[in-house]
Length: 125
Image 1 (cartoon, helix red, strand yellow):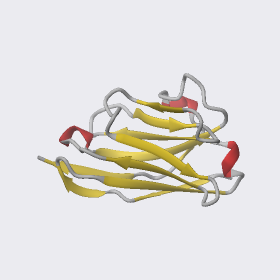
Image 2: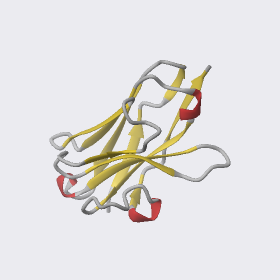
Image 3: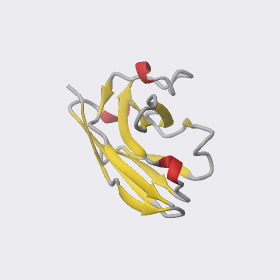
Image 4: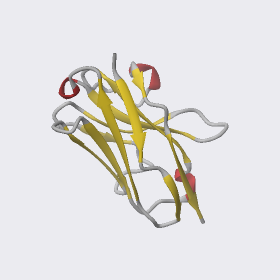
């Protein structure tokens, strides 16, 4: 069974940076696509970014392009989300997700079969 554990959340001022990490265990990490989602209070969970098993295919939501960078280290079973130029509207619970081959449905939460518990990111103005 896949287990995902996020870390790295916190509180920062607008314009600041954070790096989220998600550690994967239970199955073979480098056969899974990985994704990051976020959910603000009263809003639906939205796809932020996703990366295929090798790192050769990456997707971003328009709202984070140019500010966020996803990466993975298959030797460490870890996926990262580097977040720069943070804005108050980035405030949300951030979730890591895992599933099979990356597809065009990556931004849809139902695509992903495995989820972490989330880590809170709060950006103050």
